[in-house]
Image (cartoon, rainbow, N blue to C red; front, side, top):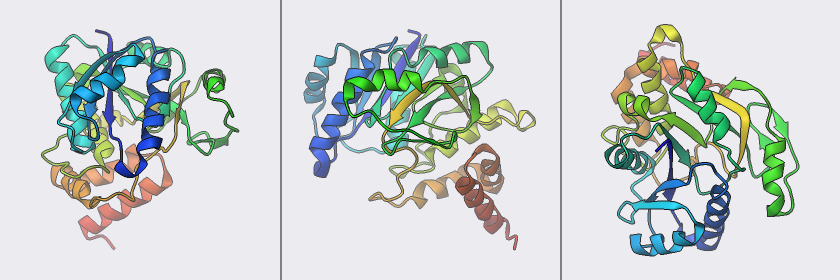
Amino acid sequence: MKLIHTLLFLVRENKITEDLFMAQVLMNSLKKSTHKTVVVYNQGYFTNDELKQYLSDFELDIHVIGEGTNAGIPAGRQNSFNYIWSNFPDTEYISELHLDMYLSSNWEDPLVDYLTSHDEPMICSGIIDHNGDMPILDKKKSLPQQSNEFNDFLIGLRENKILHGLTHPCIHVSQILKEAGGYDPAFLKGKQCFEDDSLLLSYFYYYGTRMKWHPKINYNSVAYHAVAGQRMSIDDNILINYNGLVKQYGAIGIKNLAHLRNSQWHQNYFENNYKALAGIQ
């Protein structure tokens, strides 16, 4: 298997109609992808059998795992990775998808081509969000009014640029992801927030600090991601994973994240927290 997609399937009780509509949009767009095997981690609402039945209409090779409860992003993703490594050990690449996405035809091909020809552990797709904003590029576009126009619209946004940044969807080199450790639920016990930073640090140390590795976005592929970035307004203590991050990587890890992240907000956040941990005024 060359590439397997991973997807956390969470339907919120207060937004059932909205979430199921987004799921339908994503799965229909995924049918146009080059690779059609998807490991779906069931985070709730459906039983596993119900979710398998619901997803059977989309002509994809679906593998439903999980217990039907919201285990959180780190545990859900890591269990999906472990499932792939156990059942499809020859898989070369693993993607991370979200329910609120629309993917253009063969969106993963430019990203896989890039990983094949460059010594990188992962590569991210360019994105446009529900406001028409394209982070990193500092561009804004008018979104199509009709869903059947999205495919050509996204393809038209592609450009030959590789920039510092982290977005989803992204694709990992499976073997490097395994060696670096992925998301460690022993430290990341919260539902979400800061799990991406943990992964960035694991890759940073895998390549060695001398290499000054950082994540990259390849705008030869552009996807729609309705709400990009961490959702801080969640029913969970966001500091649980931050404290786990400090426990796992220490103050120097927090300092290094100011280099790994490209946004000014992240750089200020991690620099200030490093100073607080180090007792620097």
